[in-house]
Image (cartoon, rainbow, N blue to C red; front, side, top):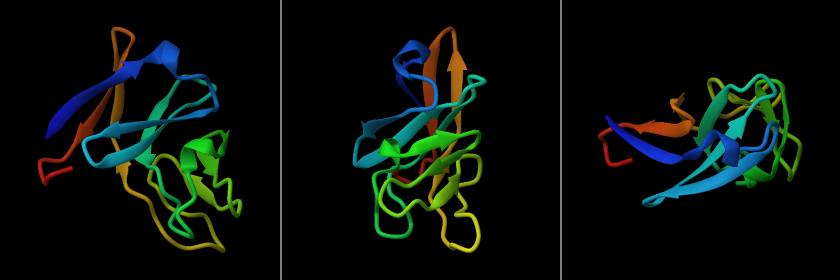
Length: 106
């Protein structure tokens, strides 16, 4: 596993997304109203919408293209929609945000 610093908590406005690139990966970072931080693949499973531009409500982001509701915890699209985005563990330490990537080339 590789741990990558992607910024600071102050750079993540609450309830808004931020797109970050780590190598070839494009991730969407989110900070919820209660300061939890999530990292997901920045691509809706439906038509590839930019999730970092979506609206955040609780632990969910709504795709800006077709309003699919994606859980930030596990990446699952909510019924009746189906699909999933990859999720990455995000942590905050001393005000810095880190994302953990698997060693499988991510």
